[in-house]
Image 1: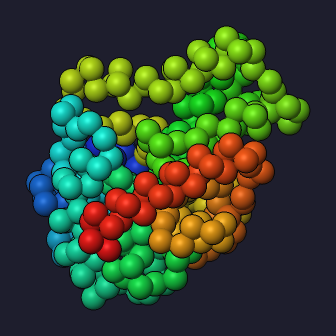
Image 2: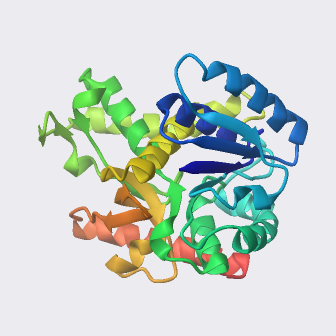
Length: 306
């Protein structure tokens, strides 16, 4: 299978492509970007970097027709990150205008069986818009959502001293600021893990403050490595039909009553994209929180005109 990357010069697109190449799970990665010289430079560098560890070929896509034989497309196209961004609604206004022409080209040149992975913020809104514009099966549209769960596990390790790899945790809902952290379903080594009140406060603060600390550094870039690892896991699962369960944004949230919406939920991934949505047990309070998140995402979809 071949992977096409829209935004292959940027931090998210290039990092994900590099992570996928190291996994040696696709035949070829094709990079496209409006900054074609930067994408071409990434092609040159990755082509040599993969030689000792991977058979993956890397090439420059000059036109969307070059994606015709790609089974997966990662759309990492987005406006440059700015420290002045206050929320997802502001990012929506920045990015919404670039989506329609991309979808027009994908619909013209790509197979309707192509799996589309979206990383531009607000991810949940754009997963929904991509599916509406392309009209392909909902299970083929996936968005980045796993970072919130990674950061929850990171925070739990920090406040408890327990090993990250043995911590079980789940975040659902909106990617980023609207993520719902299910502290009540934490596990360690498969057994229930209950935080003390102080540990819970500290973990919540670490998760809630993380992005603010990032923007305070004023690098002018978005995060890339965590997202690249997460999306490379998603891509590998689709390619290998592995049934990996990982948080993804998906339009399949209609299965739990949210029709005009896409949101992050645990998803079993394999051939063709989302094979099953795993709905976690929710307390009445968590269900109310999720209802509010769904309403917020639907409102942003309305704001975008879809």
